[in-house]
Every structure is written in structure tokens, then in C-alpha cells.
Image (cartoon, rainbow, N blue to C red; front, side, top):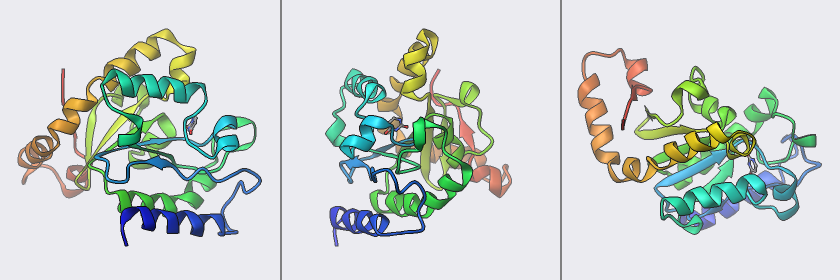
Length: 212
Ligand code: URA
């Protein structure tokens, strides 16, 4: 079975899982190229995403599209999804139990796509991978987790509310092509630097400051 088939199967399974919360909204599974090196993960669908069944198609999505274009990438070459795959009422923050309910499916989706880099959009997605991280301190830095680079970014919706956040998001986003290009080097260097020095657990999520 190829990745497309595996993802279709997973989506079908999710649609018919009665234990998942928020079933009054539509499932927004995610979209893009399953062979991508870079997977973007947001928080949860909003109104427009719920209507269209696609991630990041509202105002925040338009900004995400611009950021993708600013580094000369194409939206169809990457993959975009959310940690919670149905819209919470009135766009409220997802509850921890909602994140937990969708987590097994997110894990399987990540395993199928198997990206080298996971760019998290916003603190909910970042804290799913890096529970201790703080968005204002840790955005734009590379964290190594199980041979993947986790690269926290501000949520584009936050950038729509603040010019300084917008500027910081654009600057962090601009680092992504170098992170993608230097993935092997980054992993190699992190392993070499931590060999025998850092206790196992820290090594797993060892943070290295990639670029100035
Ligand atoms: N915000 C998100 O976190 N995800 C979307 O898909 C849209 C807006």
C-alpha cells in the first residue's frame, strides 16, 4: 500500500470512529504531498476549514500561503494538518482531552508521512511535541526528537493580530529552507555533540540553535 492509500484508509477510520470528540464538526484530515520532507501542524480547524474540509484556508491560511511562497516553496509540495481534526465550537482552544483523543491518529499520520521536519504552528502543536517549550523563547529553533527536527513557529493567526509577531514569524520561516537542506548535518552534529555527555532523555529532545 502506498502512502496515499494508507492516509485514505486512516481518514476513513477516523470518520467512522464514534469515540472521537467534536463530531458536530466536519473532519479536516489534512492535505498535501505525503512524500514531503516538511510537515506543518496547526491547532484545529476554524470556520472556513470546517466548511471546506481543508486545513488553513481562512485568513491564517492565506498568511501561511504567503509565508510558503516567501521561501519559494509550493503548498502542494508540503503537507499540512492539525493536532485536533475537527473544529471546536466558536474556535475555542482545544481541550487536553480532545488533543489526547486525536493523538493516536496524528501519530499514525506522522508515521505514514514520515517527514524529516515538523514545523509546529502555535503553542498547542509545539507543546504536543515539546511539553516544556515556551513559544516566545523557543520559536525559530530546531529541536531533535526521534530523528526528526521539531521547528516551532508562531501561529499565523497570532501574526495577524500583531506586527511584531508577524515579523518574527516571517524571520523564523525564512530559516526553514536551510533547516531542510542541512537536515543530515544537523542530526549528525547534534548526535556527535551529545554523545556520551547528555543523559538519554535530554538527548532525545536536545535543542540546538541552528542559525543566528
Ligand atoms: N488554524 C489552525 O490551527 N488550523 C487550521 O487549519 C486553520 C486555522
